Image (cartoon, rainbow, N blue to C red; front, side, top):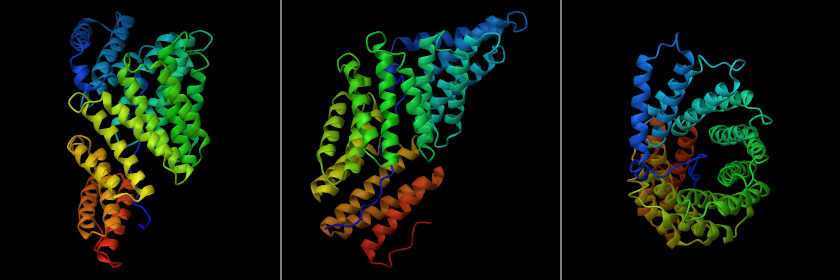
Length: 412
């Protein structure tokens, strides 16, 4: 019988309201050269426009430039174009005023929020996401439900998704409760018959927030609500017509099932359902076309298989999880996505540790310690204190198992 399991530091794949196709597919999209041409055209126009003589045309062009840069920047490896989009939107807001042009002001605030949100998703900190939340809240001051219900609902949905992302970087449940409320507000306008894609996207965001809230509260009711919302979204996201949205929803459904399985006890039914959802998603993902999306979903599968190994004390499950983690680590390049690389290293080490305990093999425990050290160096560099402390605790546990209670010196 093996003892207390080490802690995992990764599980959830964060998605956005309007998540686009994987970068490799996006790069081949005929829209890309059009957007690049639009950026060049808007910049040329701004060189000739006099802000004092044509302030409205100048502001409209700044907003349009921001939109084109944001669309391109969503799939860039770095955030340069998204930063330029933020600059363009803020320039437009120096002209638009809430009292004088509430709809234009709200539209630009919403666009600014979307760019800040995508930038914030890439950073380990919370500042960018907090700015996105502020921008969406500002937009709602200009968008009134009775006047522009669809714009109001869109912004409520965006606010809900941004709040959920921000909540993942902070503690407590208040932001998640607000995220759930914002999505429910949007669903008062959206209906599956009249706005099916908007309704499905909001159901997905509602489910993401409910899943995180249920996990944080430590209970099942919210998680069961999340399952219902994910399945509603899947009614619209047909696999053949919307494969990427279908994949993301299947993946997040798997996450909710894993979390629900954790809260429900020692059974394996929910875990097996989650594994089915992840494997379905992976049928549509390819490492050459969407490497990060593929690796994240494979990582979620490995987490579920590893937990199943805990429940069934099965070395085969741990070996499968170890193989998956090793498979995805080259995708999670340390220089490009250091936090995800470190999380995968921690979870690989945890599976090695459990296999070593189960089979009483020192070699696996020694390998786990070495991998924990790799993860700790990355967490220290990224200054992610919580993950560093969890990983340090895991390493100490593995060292004690391998070398006795005295263990070895902890990672410094």
